[in-house]
Image 1 (tube, helix red, strand yellow):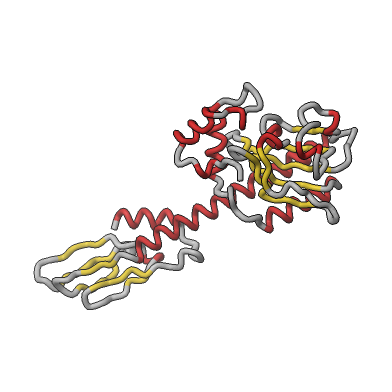
Image 2: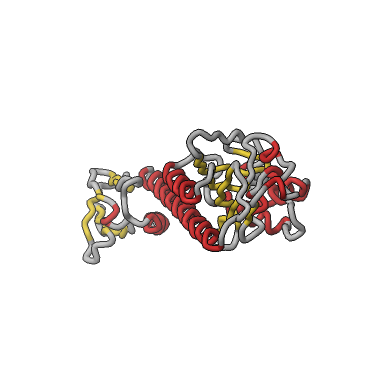
Length: 288
Protein backbone atom coordinates (compact mmCIF):
# COMPACT_ATOMS: atom_id res chain seq x y z
CA UNK A 1 0.00 0.00 0.00
CA UNK A 2 1.51 3.31 -1.06
CA UNK A 3 1.48 6.52 0.97
CA UNK A 4 -1.76 8.41 0.43
CA UNK A 5 -2.96 11.95 1.00
CA UNK A 6 -5.92 10.41 2.86
CA UNK A 7 -3.59 9.68 5.79
CA UNK A 8 -2.57 13.33 6.12
CA UNK A 9 -4.79 15.00 8.71
CA UNK A 10 -4.36 18.50 7.33
CA UNK A 11 -2.39 20.65 4.91
CA UNK A 12 0.45 21.14 7.39
CA UNK A 13 1.01 17.40 7.81
CA UNK A 14 0.88 16.88 4.04
CA UNK A 15 3.42 19.63 3.51
CA UNK A 16 5.71 18.04 6.08
CA UNK A 17 5.54 14.62 4.39
CA UNK A 18 6.38 16.15 1.02
CA UNK A 19 9.36 18.04 2.43
CA UNK A 20 10.77 14.97 4.17
CA UNK A 21 11.25 12.91 1.02
CA UNK A 22 10.93 14.73 -2.28
CA UNK A 23 12.51 11.78 -4.13
CA UNK A 24 9.22 9.89 -3.93
CA UNK A 25 7.27 12.44 -5.92
CA UNK A 26 9.54 15.05 -7.54
CA UNK A 27 10.38 14.17 -11.14
CA UNK A 28 11.14 17.69 -12.31
CA UNK A 29 12.57 20.91 -10.80
CA UNK A 30 9.31 22.53 -11.91
CA UNK A 31 7.48 20.55 -9.24
CA UNK A 32 7.28 22.46 -5.96
CA UNK A 33 5.95 21.55 -2.54
CA UNK A 34 3.30 24.27 -2.81
CA UNK A 35 2.17 23.01 -6.20
CA UNK A 36 2.05 19.39 -5.08
CA UNK A 37 0.10 20.29 -1.94
CA UNK A 38 -2.49 22.09 -4.06
CA UNK A 39 -2.69 19.17 -6.49
CA UNK A 40 -3.06 16.49 -3.81
CA UNK A 41 -5.69 18.44 -1.88
CA UNK A 42 -7.66 18.87 -5.13
CA UNK A 43 -7.42 15.10 -5.65
CA UNK A 44 -8.53 14.41 -2.07
CA UNK A 45 -11.49 16.77 -2.50
CA UNK A 46 -12.86 14.56 -5.28
CA UNK A 47 -13.68 11.92 -2.62
CA UNK A 48 -12.77 9.09 -4.96
CA UNK A 49 -9.49 7.77 -3.54
CA UNK A 50 -9.70 4.33 -1.95
CA UNK A 51 -13.10 3.59 -3.47
CA UNK A 52 -14.30 0.63 -5.50
CA UNK A 53 -14.46 0.73 -9.33
CA UNK A 54 -17.69 2.14 -10.73
CA UNK A 55 -19.60 0.89 -13.76
CA UNK A 56 -19.99 4.30 -15.45
CA UNK A 57 -16.25 4.88 -15.52
CA UNK A 58 -15.49 1.29 -16.57
CA UNK A 59 -17.90 1.44 -19.51
CA UNK A 60 -16.32 4.64 -20.76
CA UNK A 61 -12.77 3.31 -20.32
CA UNK A 62 -13.67 0.19 -22.33
CA UNK A 63 -14.93 2.43 -25.14
CA UNK A 64 -11.58 4.23 -25.12
CA UNK A 65 -9.69 0.93 -25.27
CA UNK A 66 -11.74 -0.34 -28.17
CA UNK A 67 -11.49 2.98 -30.00
CA UNK A 68 -7.69 2.93 -29.97
CA UNK A 69 -7.41 -0.86 -30.46
CA UNK A 70 -5.02 -1.38 -27.55
CA UNK A 71 -4.60 -4.00 -24.85
CA UNK A 72 -5.39 -1.68 -21.94
CA UNK A 73 -6.94 1.69 -21.14
CA UNK A 74 -7.23 3.20 -17.69
CA UNK A 75 -8.11 6.21 -15.59
CA UNK A 76 -5.29 6.67 -13.10
CA UNK A 77 -5.15 8.96 -10.07
CA UNK A 78 -1.65 10.01 -9.00
CA UNK A 79 -1.56 9.99 -5.21
CA UNK A 80 1.16 10.91 -2.73
CA UNK A 81 3.23 7.75 -3.04
CA UNK A 82 1.72 5.92 -5.99
CA UNK A 83 -1.01 5.74 -8.57
CA UNK A 84 -4.40 4.10 -8.40
CA UNK A 85 -6.29 2.78 -11.40
CA UNK A 86 -9.77 4.02 -10.66
CA UNK A 87 -11.00 2.47 -13.88
CA UNK A 88 -9.34 -0.23 -15.95
CA UNK A 89 -10.25 -1.97 -19.20
CA UNK A 90 -8.30 -4.80 -20.76
CA UNK A 91 -8.50 -6.76 -23.98
CA UNK A 92 -9.91 -10.25 -23.48
CA UNK A 93 -7.10 -12.74 -23.09
CA UNK A 94 -4.62 -10.23 -21.65
CA UNK A 95 -3.66 -9.86 -17.99
CA UNK A 96 -2.21 -6.74 -16.43
CA UNK A 97 -0.17 -8.28 -13.62
CA UNK A 98 0.49 -5.05 -11.74
CA UNK A 99 -3.00 -4.78 -10.24
CA UNK A 100 -4.88 -1.60 -9.36
CA UNK A 101 -1.97 0.18 -7.63
CA UNK A 102 1.57 1.02 -8.66
CA UNK A 103 4.44 2.81 -6.95
CA UNK A 104 4.81 6.37 -8.15
CA UNK A 105 8.39 5.67 -9.23
CA UNK A 106 7.16 3.01 -11.72
CA UNK A 107 4.29 5.13 -12.99
CA UNK A 108 4.15 6.49 -16.51
CA UNK A 109 1.20 8.64 -15.44
CA UNK A 110 3.34 10.43 -12.85
CA UNK A 111 5.22 11.84 -15.85
CA UNK A 112 2.03 12.50 -17.79
CA UNK A 113 0.65 14.92 -15.18
CA UNK A 114 3.65 17.18 -15.86
CA UNK A 115 2.94 17.41 -19.59
CA UNK A 116 0.23 18.23 -22.09
CA UNK A 117 0.55 14.64 -23.34
CA UNK A 118 3.01 11.78 -23.06
CA UNK A 119 3.47 9.38 -25.98
CA UNK A 120 6.06 6.62 -25.75
CA UNK A 121 6.09 4.84 -29.10
CA UNK A 122 8.53 2.16 -27.93
CA UNK A 123 9.34 1.90 -24.23
CA UNK A 124 12.57 -0.02 -24.89
CA UNK A 125 13.92 2.97 -26.79
CA UNK A 126 13.06 5.53 -24.11
CA UNK A 127 15.71 6.03 -21.42
CA UNK A 128 13.10 7.16 -18.89
CA UNK A 129 11.21 3.87 -18.95
CA UNK A 130 13.28 1.09 -20.51
CA UNK A 131 14.45 -0.23 -17.14
CA UNK A 132 11.20 0.17 -15.21
CA UNK A 133 9.38 -2.80 -13.75
CA UNK A 134 6.39 -2.47 -16.08
CA UNK A 135 8.63 -2.74 -19.13
CA UNK A 136 11.11 -5.40 -18.00
CA UNK A 137 8.55 -7.61 -16.26
CA UNK A 138 4.89 -8.39 -16.81
CA UNK A 139 2.88 -6.85 -18.39
CA UNK A 140 5.88 -5.96 -20.66
CA UNK A 141 4.60 -2.59 -21.80
CA UNK A 142 5.93 -1.47 -25.17
CA UNK A 143 3.58 1.42 -25.93
CA UNK A 144 2.06 4.12 -23.73
CA UNK A 145 0.09 7.28 -24.44
CA UNK A 146 -1.60 9.44 -21.83
CA UNK A 147 -3.06 12.89 -21.26
CA UNK A 148 -3.61 14.57 -17.88
CA UNK A 149 -6.95 14.86 -16.09
CA UNK A 150 -7.00 18.61 -15.51
CA UNK A 151 -9.49 20.10 -13.04
CA UNK A 152 -10.97 23.58 -13.63
CA UNK A 153 -8.41 25.10 -11.23
CA UNK A 154 -5.55 23.74 -13.34
CA UNK A 155 -4.47 20.81 -11.14
CA UNK A 156 -3.59 17.57 -12.92
CA UNK A 157 -4.89 14.86 -10.61
CA UNK A 158 -4.24 11.88 -12.84
CA UNK A 159 -4.30 10.67 -16.41
CA UNK A 160 -6.34 8.90 -19.04
CA UNK A 161 -3.96 6.49 -20.76
CA UNK A 162 -3.78 3.67 -23.29
CA UNK A 163 -1.13 0.90 -23.27
CA UNK A 164 -0.11 -2.03 -25.40
CA UNK A 165 2.35 -4.93 -25.56
CA UNK A 166 3.36 -3.93 -29.08
CA UNK A 167 5.25 -0.74 -29.97
CA UNK A 168 3.65 1.89 -32.18
CA UNK A 169 6.50 3.44 -34.17
CA UNK A 170 4.15 6.11 -35.51
CA UNK A 171 2.93 7.04 -32.01
CA UNK A 172 -0.34 8.97 -32.17
CA UNK A 173 -1.52 11.32 -34.86
CA UNK A 174 -2.55 14.85 -33.89
CA UNK A 175 -6.17 13.83 -34.41
CA UNK A 176 -5.75 10.86 -32.04
CA UNK A 177 -4.15 13.10 -29.41
CA UNK A 178 -7.06 15.51 -29.67
CA UNK A 179 -9.46 12.61 -29.31
CA UNK A 180 -7.71 11.41 -26.16
CA UNK A 181 -7.81 14.94 -24.73
CA UNK A 182 -11.54 15.17 -25.46
CA UNK A 183 -12.19 11.90 -23.66
CA UNK A 184 -10.09 13.05 -20.69
CA UNK A 185 -12.32 16.13 -20.39
CA UNK A 186 -15.36 13.86 -20.22
CA UNK A 187 -13.71 11.86 -17.42
CA UNK A 188 -12.98 15.07 -15.51
CA UNK A 189 -16.63 16.11 -15.78
CA UNK A 190 -17.71 12.68 -14.55
CA UNK A 191 -15.42 13.07 -11.54
CA UNK A 192 -16.80 16.52 -10.76
CA UNK A 193 -20.42 15.40 -11.14
CA UNK A 194 -19.75 12.45 -8.84
CA UNK A 195 -18.19 14.73 -6.22
CA UNK A 196 -21.11 17.16 -6.37
CA UNK A 197 -23.64 14.36 -5.93
CA UNK A 198 -21.79 13.07 -2.88
CA UNK A 199 -21.57 16.53 -1.33
CA UNK A 200 -25.29 17.11 -1.85
CA UNK A 201 -26.17 13.76 -0.28
CA UNK A 202 -23.93 14.45 2.71
CA UNK A 203 -25.41 17.89 3.21
CA UNK A 204 -28.95 16.55 3.06
CA UNK A 205 -28.12 13.76 5.46
CA UNK A 206 -26.51 16.15 7.95
CA UNK A 207 -29.39 18.62 7.86
CA UNK A 208 -31.98 15.86 8.05
CA UNK A 209 -30.38 14.37 11.15
CA UNK A 210 -30.19 17.81 12.75
CA UNK A 211 -33.80 18.75 12.08
CA UNK A 212 -35.29 15.36 12.87
CA UNK A 213 -33.75 15.58 16.32
CA UNK A 214 -35.39 18.91 17.10
CA UNK A 215 -38.89 19.51 18.34
CA UNK A 216 -40.94 22.55 19.11
CA UNK A 217 -42.38 22.20 22.57
CA UNK A 218 -44.11 24.27 25.19
CA UNK A 219 -44.24 22.62 28.58
CA UNK A 220 -46.29 25.34 30.29
CA UNK A 221 -49.22 25.50 27.90
CA UNK A 222 -50.80 23.89 24.87
CA UNK A 223 -50.09 25.61 21.56
CA UNK A 224 -51.76 25.46 18.19
CA UNK A 225 -50.19 26.32 14.86
CA UNK A 226 -51.87 28.19 12.06
CA UNK A 227 -50.56 29.58 8.79
CA UNK A 228 -49.84 33.27 8.60
CA UNK A 229 -50.94 35.22 5.49
CA UNK A 230 -47.49 35.05 3.87
CA UNK A 231 -47.70 31.20 3.99
CA UNK A 232 -44.00 30.97 4.84
CA UNK A 233 -44.12 31.27 8.63
CA UNK A 234 -46.37 30.03 11.36
CA UNK A 235 -47.90 32.03 14.18
CA UNK A 236 -47.82 30.35 17.54
CA UNK A 237 -50.86 31.27 19.62
CA UNK A 238 -50.37 30.51 23.27
CA UNK A 239 -53.34 29.70 25.51
CA UNK A 240 -51.75 31.88 28.17
CA UNK A 241 -53.61 35.22 28.23
CA UNK A 242 -51.83 38.19 26.72
CA UNK A 243 -48.96 36.18 25.18
CA UNK A 244 -48.30 35.66 21.53
CA UNK A 245 -45.03 34.72 19.88
CA UNK A 246 -43.86 34.01 16.35
CA UNK A 247 -41.77 30.99 15.39
CA UNK A 248 -39.74 30.94 12.15
CA UNK A 249 -40.22 27.25 11.37
CA UNK A 250 -39.00 25.69 8.07
CA UNK A 251 -41.10 26.48 5.00
CA UNK A 252 -44.30 24.46 4.42
CA UNK A 253 -42.88 23.05 1.15
CA UNK A 254 -40.27 21.13 3.16
CA UNK A 255 -42.27 19.90 6.12
CA UNK A 256 -45.62 19.02 7.60
CA UNK A 257 -46.47 20.54 10.93
CA UNK A 258 -48.19 17.99 13.14
CA UNK A 259 -50.25 19.55 15.90
CA UNK A 260 -49.82 17.89 19.27
CA UNK A 261 -51.17 18.85 22.74
CA UNK A 262 -47.76 19.95 24.00
CA UNK A 263 -45.32 19.54 21.12
CA UNK A 264 -45.11 19.79 17.34
CA UNK A 265 -42.52 17.56 15.71
CA UNK A 266 -40.97 18.65 12.44
CA UNK A 267 -41.36 15.97 9.75
CA UNK A 268 -38.97 16.29 6.80
CA UNK A 269 -38.91 14.67 3.37
CA UNK A 270 -36.52 11.78 2.77
CA UNK A 271 -33.04 13.30 2.23
CA UNK A 272 -32.15 10.64 -0.34
CA UNK A 273 -35.11 11.31 -2.63
CA UNK A 274 -36.10 14.92 -2.01
CA UNK A 275 -35.37 17.42 -4.78
CA UNK A 276 -35.44 20.41 -2.43
CA UNK A 277 -32.28 22.49 -2.23
CA UNK A 278 -30.28 21.40 0.84
CA UNK A 279 -29.01 24.97 1.26
CA UNK A 280 -32.59 26.00 2.10
CA UNK A 281 -32.60 23.39 4.88
CA UNK A 282 -29.47 24.92 6.35
CA UNK A 283 -30.77 28.49 6.14
CA UNK A 284 -34.01 27.57 7.87
CA UNK A 285 -32.16 25.63 10.54
CA UNK A 286 -30.13 28.72 11.39
CA UNK A 287 -33.17 30.98 11.37
CA UNK A 288 -35.43 28.70 13.42
